[in-house]
Structure formats: C-alpha cells, structure tokens
Amino acid sequence: MKLFEEKIESIKNDMVTQNEVYDKRMHFYNQGLGGWLNSALEKDKTIIALSAAELGAIISYFSSSKTLASIEYHLLVFSALFLMVAIFSSLVSFDMNKKYLMDSICERDVKDIGWIDRVSHYAFIFGTILTIINFAIIISAKVH
Image (cartoon, rainbow, N blue to C red; front, top):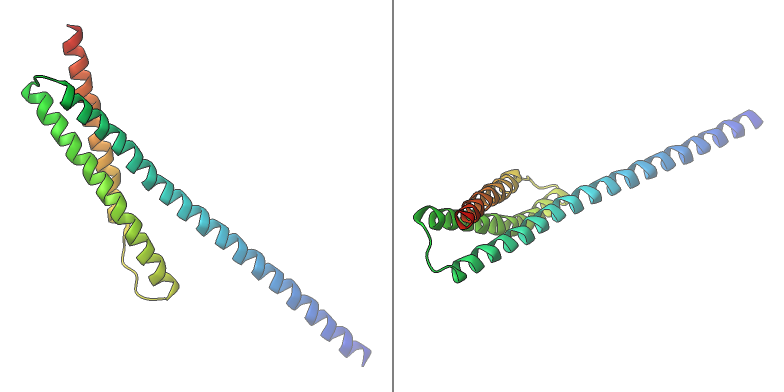
C-alpha cells in the first residue's frame, strides 16, 4: 500500500511540474506575441509620424517658394503622393491587424495581411528618397 501511495504522490508531483512547465511556456508565448504586436504597431506609428513630418516640410516649401522648376515640382508631388500612401496604408494596417487578431482568436480562416505592411514600408521609403533628392537639388541650386 505504501508503494502505491508513493507512486500516486510521484504522479501528482509530475503533474504539478508539467503544469508549471505549461504555464511558463504559455507565459513566454504571451510575452513574445505581445512584444511582436507592440513592435509592429510602433513601426506603423513611426511611419505615420515621419511621413506627416515630411509632408509638412513639402507643404511648407510649396507655400514659401515663388517658382519651382518642373523637376522640383514633380519630385515634390510624387514624394507627397508616396507619403500619403504610406500614411493611408499604415492606418488601414491598424484596422486589418485588429481583424486578423480577432479571426485568429476565434479560430476563423485568416487572410495574409503582410502585403499592406509592405505597401506602407515601400511607399515611405520611396517618398523619403524622393524628398531627400528633391531637397538636395533645391539646396544645390540655392548654393550655386
């Protein structure tokens, strides 16, 4: 009888250990998922903030400049369009992320939403590059 009780006690201890391991794994998974979500949201917020700042610089230059060369005008317009696409796609990404999470939690069929992040990322990069090129042209023209 004592051997049987020891065996039951051993099984209980193993079960407690397994539950503790499961709880630790779930905690680690939850923290990892939370960190991933926070970094993804922060990236989108940063793209929105930087794009808005660049748009502000472009609008400020448009309003203060009396004449613009054709290349300057077109570069500013295209960079502003790319930056507006970056802002809009980041805002859409916020909404799509919410729907994606709800579908995942409810175990519904989830759609790939990575494309909207790529659109936002590349639109921001192209808009920033065009803005830098344009302001470099403007500064070099003012210096000479």
